Length: 396
Ligand code: USQ
Image (cartoon, rainbow, N blue to C red; front, side):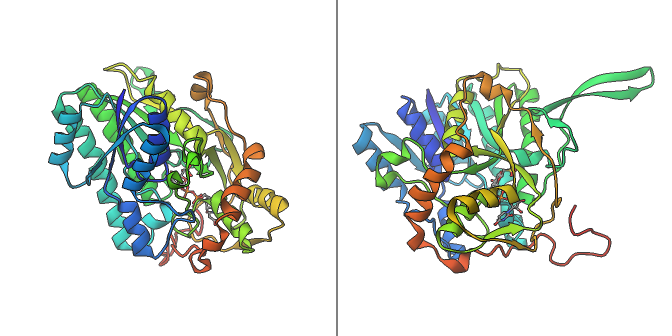
């Protein structure tokens, strides 16, 4: 297949590009390097020393003899260029990772709120509109999030995207299949909810073939391919805006910083290792929906854990102290989370479990690069509701 990877220089996009290239696909990375620009803006840096895209591609060609092409393009702004690219390159599939993906960054300031919504909504809509205008039969695979569902499942199991309901009518109740009711917890997550609606519309109206991957929190940094050469290393964020919870705990442990558990740590979340993420993207690409079919939704996660249990696990492994800090977010203090994830398991996914992969991650990434940590970037300073209005509870 010829595959365009939008956001192919980022944390998920780069390892996915390498994996698909290694599997024999022709890969074209499309990126505007916004993630690198945000690092510069925030004064942060990946824990791992990532190389620029040209050096990454040259290293990949040197190590494997395989070429990855690249185009610099802002999907939210450069519609005509993207349409031109589709017409010239004629990809079989487009994988869309090109969105601002950090919840804390999306809630930080009016500027970052507006940027996240403008960028994510426009990028997704431009991609959909350009695919239709190109007239090509492209399979669009989008990286969505488990966060579209919300996390308070009160004993229910979250299905893979759709829910069968009975709606009362004048002549009795009518069975309906609906998208699982959305309940985003940040503006970033909200943009992924809006994406879902755009996908449903374009699948219905234009017969686009779309797969939406509702992904949990990634842990880990390296895949088989990123480990082949130091110049292929993937990014690893540990700062208060972009670092995700388990990767943050691993770095904190490596530098002797207490593990920063928000609130009670009773939040339960879904997780998936980065190696399983690239495999899922490949599985999704090889099992597209038919034209005219509804959007295909996978829950791309393999385990659920409570934040305080993760902290305890990392503490047992490393001896790190656990500290509870006031929760800067507005989220349920305690929640259960049960998720249906059979679709990928049925297609052959064999999950990397936390119990087998965690120690390796501590040694090979967190401890190895601990000397690069800037301690001042660790605190989470983005507050969800800084000027809380009367009547809005602390956690909702
Ligand atoms: N948390 C802590 N301590 C920390 C950092 C986070 O207790 O130092 C807590 C948060 O309060 C939250 C949980 O850990 O309850 C998860 O936070 P996170 O930053 O690891 O994950 P999140 O903000 O949900 O976002 C990440 C990715 C996003 C992806 C999402 C999947 O940045 O792109 O969509 O995970 S999911 O969470 O399933 O929606």
